[in-house]
Length: 141
Image (cartoon, rainbow, N blue to C red):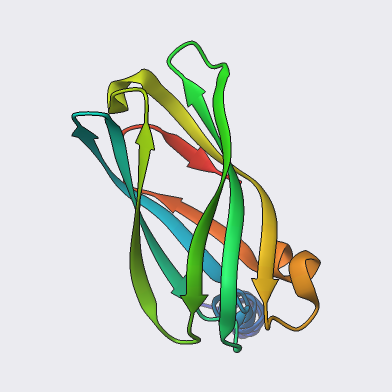
């Protein structure tokens, strides 16, 4: 490798490496739809939440839209995730009555309804929100 190519490759690695590190260090509130489980009266949704935003959240609540198998909004409700301590991962389960799990095609985090204790309030909390999905249906914000 020529010296000039070495310099260019080294600079590119430094720039892209710094960008990746900055993205990893970005404060976030991660919500993962982890699992769905049929119940006799509906479906249990399991979420895994990780707060790496640098601040405890005393109460986090998200307005969530549940779409049926035809892609139509079936339910719009607020799910209270409670306290999300900085640096911790927690599991929250919500039982949604009415339909079996295969009756849902998508879950959408429609809005942040409360994010008590988070600097910048609901808007900053919404900007820090990141979603992930391990379920068989679509999930995102």
